[in-house]
Length: 253
Image 1 (cartoon, one colour):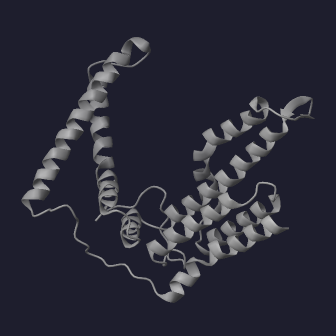
Image 2 (cartoon, helix red, strand yellow):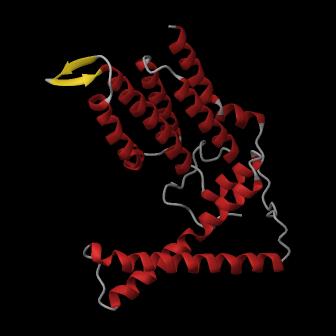
Image 3 (cartoon, helix red, strand yellow):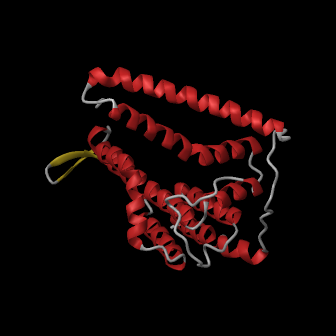
């Protein structure tokens, strides 16, 4: 079930974090993000502790800091949004370096940056220590709706196929002298997108018919049964439990 190759975020290794069952890591990452989001934004020290906890996980997973930081660049659009908040938000104003900024906007920007960065970092660590196929098995083990798991499986499996189809179409256009240089070429690109959609739809129909002819009845067979011991669950839940203690201190201190 799932793709038969490693995704780009995955970093092969044999660390204790790599060895944990996928559903325990999924549950730990989800609970950690919930705790981070529930932390009051005024408890700035708590977010520093969360960052230290994630750094500890990265250390035990043998994920280099550079590898992690490069993949955090995916949150750049959210950073841009957060930077604008102090300028556009209403309410009490304060002056910083000659700029009039909203106090609520500053708190909002901090809230987005701190919680967003920690959430993305937790997701990157999960992806860098768990193969896609294992993630799908973990979702299945956590009793997510089978249809959603199957959709995700097919998306992963055929993502590269669709990408190759796009590449071949681009090569075909360029071999005929086409080069998109402006708005006047958008029509050609739109027709290419439509052709790609039709080809993908027809491929999906053929795959579905092939599956039905082989006995598919709405659910995929489970080949590998993933289980976790009590010790593995305790190790995985160490991160969200520690974060929960920090969160409670942030609310009551």
